[in-house]
Image (cartoon, rainbow, N blue to C red; front, side):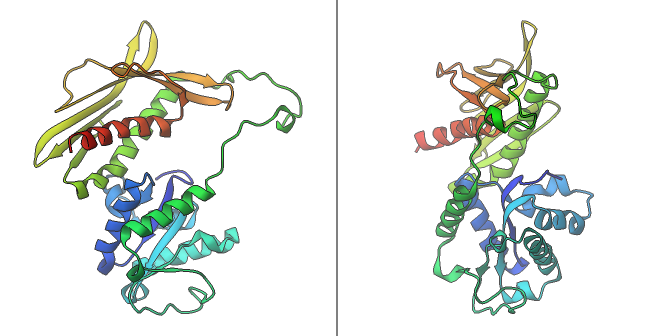
Length: 302
């Protein structure tokens, strides 16, 4: 399962509120949030003990926030309460009450020992899921720490060091990690398009990410990312187009570089069709650039 702070939000809910929770999840994903939702991890969870794994998600800081949908069913359910107790224990360990962002459903009254009456909460009846998602996104983005390169005086050694790639830097590993992130993020956000009538199918065979966007069962857009060796230099090849991407030709590529400003490995993505090869990107930024192509296509065809 994922490392810490893989998700912006993890939702916890009773089965009776699945429709509400899923609509909220999809609205959050549409705003660019990474959300832990059980249906998004069916493949990863296959064969695993979900009680053990879910305790890690809710109770070990793998999500930045936990959003429980408190209802009468929730309070009476063994599984949702196990998730909440894990989150509560983690918030106590962190000494951070704001780790849990409660949403109350219906006329439920949560016992004081589970949720203090002094704790601010939202009620599902007062907001649409889109409004709840927007509030959540604002909260997440207001608390994401800004990345900044350390000044020479702040370095552990206490002396000035060269801003060059360390001996452990591997361009291939950087590309491999980016490809993994792209595959995971496309799989996590694929369901966000369903509310607009599109189905996003994602395959991740060895060292390849294949994305197929369908409408009414017909392919309307395709995207593929894979390893490619050009003149002895490893890179990620990118191919995309409508109504589908086929074949081995590429119209974009990404190479690994050491970013001296941020002192980390990043990607330089060159978009052959748009003629752009801009700033160095993180793996998450690279995914955002590819996801944006799908969104732009959908917007332009409506």
